[in-house]
Length: 143
Image (cartoon, rainbow, N blue to C red):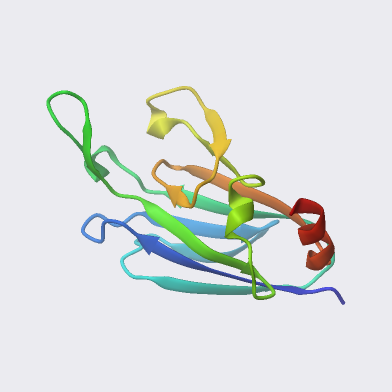
């Protein structure tokens, strides 16, 4: 069986107004926190070979999470970071900027957009990282 061990670290920039996050692999939700108010070391064993979709879903972001000055500049903003992404212990953070897609609509203030993911989520939306197992073959193909 070609299983793979996935790990990452979840953190929030603002514990005073915590955000929520779900993590899914395919149709299985294995992490669900409504208030990210501490650092979370996440680990999940993906048991079967094939194509997969790893998704991070930011939720519960409200206007109160973003402080704006009189000129419309963001002064402070609550965000969630996803770091130390590893498959079978192999650091895959560099792949997030080339493979992962972040889809959001600026919390309803703009048209939907898809952009590269740089490890930080500041808008309700979904980061999708499509990969396949055996993971070592996928890593070789995407390096």
